[in-house]
Every structure is written in C-alpha cells, then in structure tokens.
Length: 152
Image (cartoon, rainbow, N blue to C red; front, side):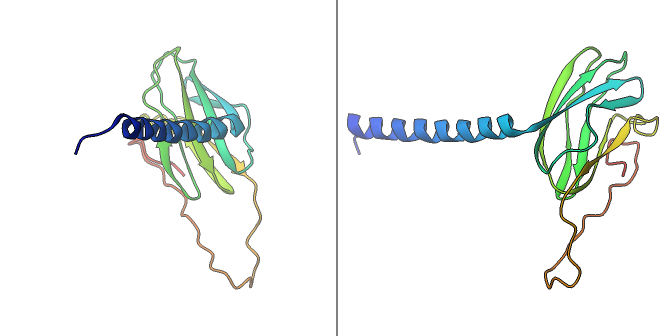
C-alpha cells in the first residue's frame, strides 16, 4: 500500500496533537502542585512544611551535606517513590500525588533514616464516617529498614 502525502500529513498532525495534549496535562499537574522544599543535612531532613493538602506535591530536595543522600516518600495509596542518589551540593525534584493521611519521608540510603533522616507529613482529609455503608480500606504503615525501604 502506497502512502499518500495527505495521509502522512494527517498522521503527523494526529501525533503532534496527542503530544501537545499530553504536555499540557503534565504542565498543568506540575503548575498546580504544592511545593515542599527539603534540605538534607548530616542526618537531618528540614522540610518547609509538614502539612500539605491532598493532590500533586513537588518535593524540591537540596543536599547541603558532605554525604550523598536520596529522598523517598510513601503513604496511603502511594507506593514508595524515590530520587536517585543526590550528591553533596546537588538538588533533585520528586513529583507525587498524595492522599489524606500520614506520609513518611526519609533518606533511603542504608542507615540514614535510623540516624534521624526521616519525618512525617500530614495530609488532611475527611475522616471515614462510621456506619456509612461503604467499604473502607487502609494501607498499613511502612516499617523501618536500613536497606532503603520505608521506615514507618
């Protein structure tokens, strides 16, 4: 089958429109995200806020330490998300969508959370109504490890 110029142009236009729509969705999610600045120092996490509304959250992490770190987050309905290793003096960004509840943040480098590089963020939301007739599920809290997993 021989492709004609109008058909090729139509396909190219369709691909361009889909790409533009996707870029708009990503830009909107990033633009509406609440930003929390995180400074990683020698075995401390300093957060600009420990309370954030549910929805997209952008963590901007700066390693102000002499040691390499990383940053991880887990919470209700959110599997652990993390940055790559952040070298001293460098920064990273992590975009996640948070649900109501307690969210754990920590440095997933082995042993760092145990030395104090951990915190909890509160995401306010409506409490479940007793006897509401609906099904309620809960996500168990992460547990402490030194292997880079959730600390709880």
